[in-house]
Image 1: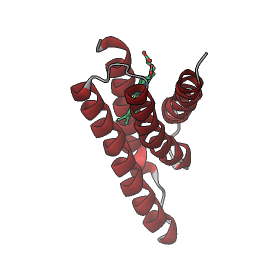
Image 2: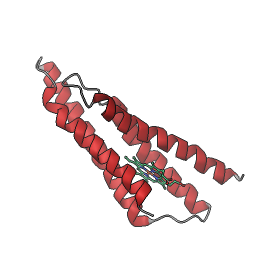
Image 3: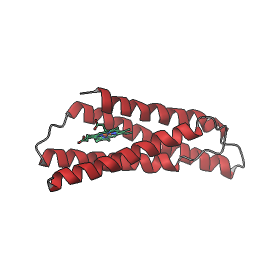
Image 4: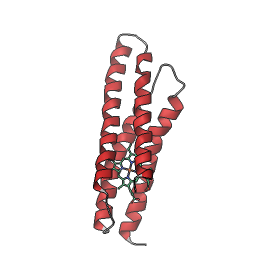
Length: 127
Ligand code: HEM
C-alpha cells in the first residue's frame, strides 16, 4: 500500500467521523424541544471542509478522478451547514443572555440534518 493510499484512507476515516458528528448530532436531538447543542455540528462541518479538501488533494496527487461538479455541490452543502450552525450559535447566545428558551432554534437542527443527509446522498448516489 502506497503512502498516498494510506493518506487517502486516513482522511476518509476522518471524513466519515465528521459525517457522523453532523448526522449523529441531528438524530440525537431530533426529539429534543430545547437546550440544543450545535457544537458537534460546528466541529463536523469544519472537519468535512478540511478533510474533503485533503481528499481532493490526495486523489489528484495519486492520479485518481475528482468529479468537480460533485465536489462543488458537497462544498456548498458543507458551507451551508457551517453558516446555519454559526447563525444558530449566535441566536442561542442571545436567547440565553435574555434568559429565554432556545426552542425557536429547533428548525435549524432539522435544516442541518437535512443538508447533512443530502450531502451523504450526493456522496453515495452521484457516481
Ligand atoms: C456535510 C458534508 C459532507 C458529507 C456528509 C460527506 C460525506 C462523504 C461520504 C459518506 C463519503 C464516502 C463515500 C464514498 O467514498 O463513496 C465521502 C467521500 C468523499 N468526500 Fe465528502 N462529504 C462532505 C463534504 C465534503 C466536502 C466539502 C468535500 C470537498 C470539497 C468532500 C470530498 C470528498 C471526496 C473527495 C470523497 C472521496 C474519497 C475517496 O473515496 O477517495 N466531501 N464524503
